[in-house]
Image (cartoon, rainbow, N blue to C red; front, side):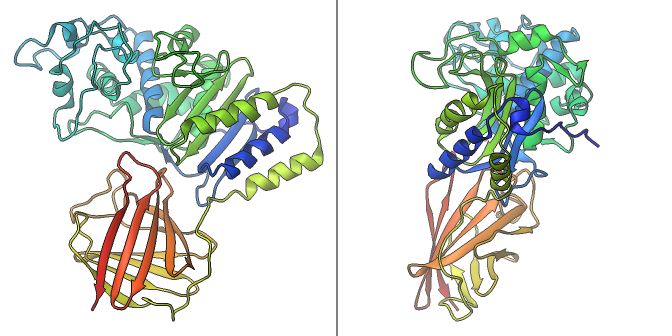
Length: 479
């Protein structure tokens, strides 16, 4: 059982609660879909909240925030003498290629992988590849390693493969006694490649609180609860600026320099681990603070701008304890809720209720849809002989667990929900039924609009974020 983090009122840790309230105001006004937030100062949690249906107990996909855990695993391996940053990467995979790789691949070292400066102009793609290590080693490297930054998830995967080669353990297994257990991080999982290596650059799943624990470990330069887990010098080196990734005078947190799988930020001394769609571990040594955030959004800079605007200035040791403000913040954090469709509650008499619709052939293999409207609507999806019945709340999220794989959005039938835990809410407005499906261990929320006309149904599907989030239209006819 993990040890609880220490908590304090914001003012007790030198944080003005008004700054947190203003941050929440702007998050709401700018419609930034945060899922979880924790603010820590002086190693104490001063504010935490989750936007329903997301909860503190839920793991959340990290995407590229995973990279910083892989980087830390490299640090442990360096400390134990298993790996050197100056090791050539070919050393770890002798005989993998049938012929000699290109000249610059032969020059590539571990430090080039961890620093995102491999010499590639285009990141190697593992799409539809069975052997990712082979694909990387066989790729062409036109530039001298170390000469140019290129964000390269494939490079982080190679760090994972190297670590598993030298330790005989997956990265998460290697980290368990060294980092995860000492930090109290439990019940984790990490996606793997077809060859069984953990993906390294993405695919790690932990709770918002676990991100906060990791940030505290970083803030304390590798120490946690009084125990030095890794050399402080490694944390200093791993989070320092090593290579330019753009013009630092540009007001962007993606051009302030890159470390060892960490990003430098605009405020002096601040750095972060981050992942797609708004997963953040922000470390502020000067302020002695950590901010952990999970989200499902595209405006990544927007969230950071609000942190710099409201939360950083709120960290002041002369913060005043005002009970009314503290109570207002506590109530606000307890009532956080993800935006949901607004409108009237459907009744069993609404068009389309209780009607089974056959769907026109589609690439998802969906064959049928049915709505049963009422005090609690049920939305049923069919894929051949399989069906998924989802309860949909009105003005509230209703959660359900459906059978499916936790690591894939497809199963043997060709279709399943992306993840097995989903919450739904919907309402009738302007002649259509609009409802959202929030996959509560992910950033993803699907919005569906159903329009009924005679014996026909048109269902428009839109995902909030994604690398391919174009809207999809399904058409169906009733029996």
